[in-house]
Length: 295
Image 1 (cartoon, rainbow, N blue to C red):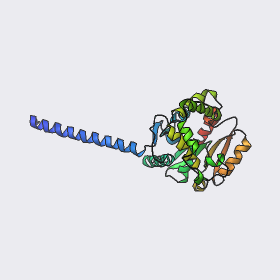
Image 2 (cartoon, one colour):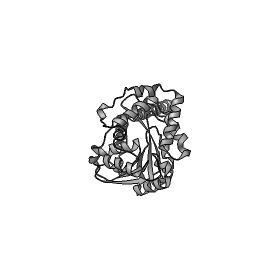
Image 3 (cartoon, rainbow, N blue to C red):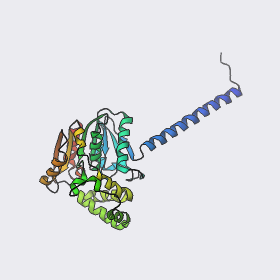
Image 4 (cartoon, rainbow, N blue to C red):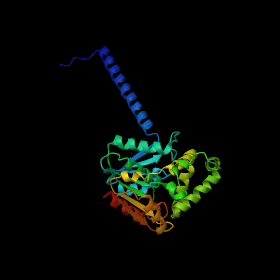
């Protein structure tokens, strides 16, 4: 027999429900805030389903650089697409930029408890992929780097030494003080140098122009200071490397052979008629190699 509840009992029940809802909502908000705080240097968008793939863009690029790649592979792969602090719509950070990104990526891998994770990184993203792999992060199965080196500074600076590279130089100050119009012109020139596909020049330049200026200047110094050549010996699986044969294969081979000398297992694939953005200059060859890598 059902006994009808009194008004007092109904009010008590309502209060219990409302308190429970309020506590639950508060916990969800706190959890959301704690997650965003944990990954302040990266924003990750997830698309597709299947085997996990972490996609790491190059310097100044947003995760949109992988749009065509994701469209091609997301049917069988869960794509985790990363954009870094200071680029796109991700707020800049004041702390050590590149180190913090690497640490947050490590936390992201650990918290997701990936099994057989593949990492594909372009340029700076490739260097980050090597960094994570050298630290033997749990769950990483294999890595593909696209036109990336373990020590970019050594290719650009004679008698390279990480310790001699400093942040507060006249060049850095000039870059910080550069007018927006001059910075835009520089961005377009860089885009033309890094990509042969003229249809992509405006997009690449736009990513550069929209970057946080301090992140652009000091983040680049972070990259110049980073030297992972010795750490490559810690990587115990084969790394696939796509290298743009630009300006000539012989010149590129010299740098890649020297820089990757301590990487025990590797496959270097040289892509002809391509500048730095291989995924734009030679898409068909690029995506075929990506598919083979993921298979």
